[in-house]
Length: 317
Image (cartoon, rainbow, N blue to C red):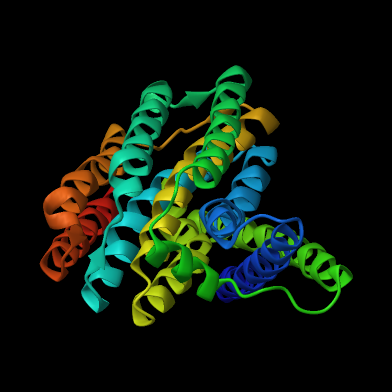
């Protein structure tokens, strides 16, 4: 058991460091290529913080552990809204910009419904994975186009510019961060998956529950840090944009990429797990629309809902 726990903890540390390095290097490179901080924040940073989920899920898929890959995506999406966004709103009420209300949040709901529908048979084929990845490409292209052609509120532009200062040093430094980040992510994913599977078998816990809880929590560390820091700095757009972008990427990019690597079979995943993940996406939209702000009491509700799900889930192991 000690070895399994050491593997999981080491995996968590490597995944966090790898995700930070990847985001830092790729963001700086994107800025050097002429992308605005707003575009980089909505795409590179939001997707970069999901890199641990991607690497872990692909590794699990290659190892034939489809339940961990599926559970990672479903658990991460529920955790992102219930725990991370709930905690962030508790620290600082989050004002919501019009673009998120009109475009990004509805897209997140549609993508969540699509992913939930595909998962109903607990199987994701390569064809379905390809469809999800095509959807991700379309979303990125649309986001970049919209950010460049539609005038954004000055406060939002300044917020992202402050969070993503101009790159310093040479581009080789950025490339080194990207490469080192990827290497750490790959190593961390190996420790995380191997340790989680070993722990699951030792205690008789299903791999699905491990994926929904321990793996999902570990791979969501970058989102947690990003959102808490954004809340403390009074940068609500970065916090909400990161979570919504991450949830979209988790389904389209991670579920799609893992399935394209190897068709996924999610033995142990229950319908309730799918419903809960979709429900968190659905309930977030009216919360964001009520006064265009996510209040502290709504954050408490999200936290309570996630805690309730965790209490319900563990006896099912």
